[in-house]
Length: 157
Image 1 (tube, one colour):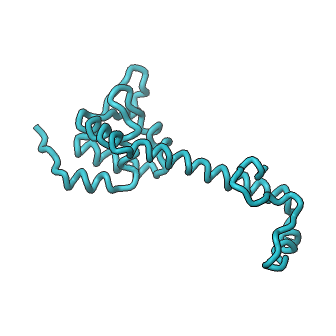
Image 2 (cartoon, one colour):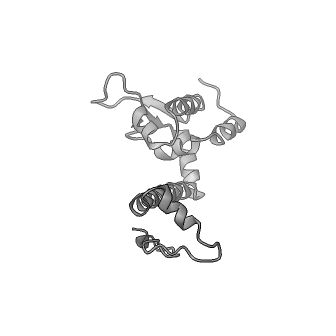
Image 3 (cartoon, one colour):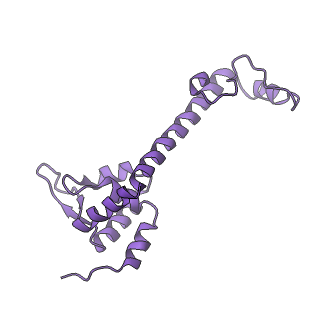
């Protein structure tokens, strides 16, 4: 029977980048193929592989197979210990905070995309942009298509 990890080992694992999201994303029924898991996380495949290896060593996840999986597919599910700790994370609000973090990250990325598209549409190169940057620093940017100061994202388009 494997030796049970001590809390210090769990603490080290959960403080590593990507460890908590792996536990939050996996379940104990269907699990996920490694590639699906790696695609869900903003981490390199090497980092995901390292986290999975550590999670396996800590008996938080285990490999499994599902009919129809490709022969080389590596599918992982939570163990009972992993599921228990996932429930604690959920009860503490960590899962909801992670989902909000992902939602806000997407909003940020979409905002940057809208901004860059707006700039491409409204400035025909360095000359026009520099003309607007040369405005007296006490005056407002007075480009007719410039978005007005607001938190309403619809005005950005």
